[in-house]
Image 1 (cartoon, rainbow, N blue to C red):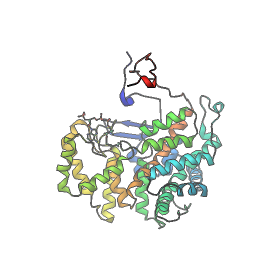
Image 2: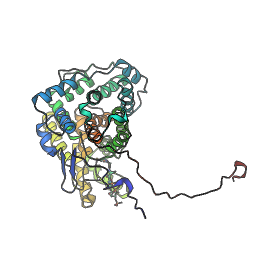
Image 3: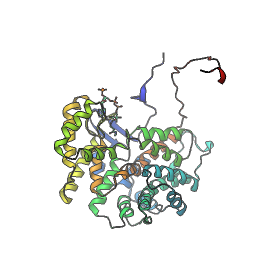
Image 4: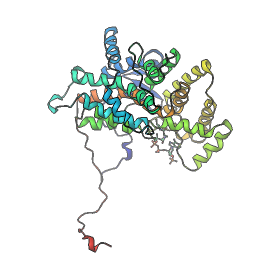
Length: 387
Ligand SMILES: CC(C)(COP(=O)(O)OP(=O)(O)OC[C@H]1O[C@@H](n2cnc3c(N)ncnc32)[C@H](O)[C@@H]1OP(=O)(O)O)[C@@H](O)C(=O)NCCC(=O)NCCS
């Protein structure tokens, strides 16, 4: 009898060298380099290169990649026009998904099956290299443009003298970004850039396996990331801290939720059974930011939630994940709450594409099986005879 594994928990679906997680020890590495080291020493642009090519770039390689990203930030006015037609009350993730799907019509990247042979390196093909550059470079522009337009403002043109993170803050506010804010956001982007076989990466790979183009793949991954059990949790965690409001309210709130078997957002993980290593880095960043700029009013609430969760369900391996502290950091940076998940997408696009590059070297169409539990050979009952 075939065995069903709900949610494919623990089932490897391909070999990969992009990222590594040890959920028991709380280890996350990108291409073999620990996340803490990258957060300390690298930049988002360098990490994107590392994920895609599997090695750190030398000076010339980095300069070219960075230049290509900086010079492809602008989006065509027709994409902006298209986004103007979207309801300003809609969620920015939905706007991002729609705009990314449309991008693929402006930069045709359809794949001829004959192009993809065992060992094909899409990074070495111009058409695909530029798709990758455009996707990474333009996602922040799309998110910032939607944010501006839904408030009745014109989008702010991207600047090519700023880093990826600093330029995003610039496009949101039209203010020169504070260097500390830009660096903190840069580290947040590093922390969210890749996370092995999560739901959005898997969704992208399912689409990639059909030899659909990378814009379609990224649009599908963005769709998967919107859900509150995945990328949407960062927004929900901050909403929960706001709802709790004070440190005194934490214990009764959390205990009531746990009793009702409700999910606490920003805690628990399919793979990590200890505190997510990214949550440690984010908490450190939050504390650094608060020392310089004043403490976020909900930071103590968050800490108390963590303590109470740990007390009640810590022994079951439920601990803070990446989404637990990212909200208070983004909020302190002035990023609106419903842009938290789009910021996650801005970072994760590098990971999605790195997996796609790897997949195209050895592709096999995803076509899993099911266990049919329905009936067979039923008669067709005519409408008049149906009760
Ligand atoms: C991420 C998540 C879906 C992974 O869960 P999973 O691997 O499917 O774990 P399960 O649903 O099998 O849960 C195992 C047990 O832990 C509990 N649990 C898991 N996450 C929980 C949470 N966030 N709050 C309360 N209880 C939780 C479940 O109720 C279950 O308890 P039980 O054994 O008594 O029934 C889950 O932890 C969750 O919903 N977290 C909140 C959303 C979130 O922060 N997502 C971002 C992930 S980076």
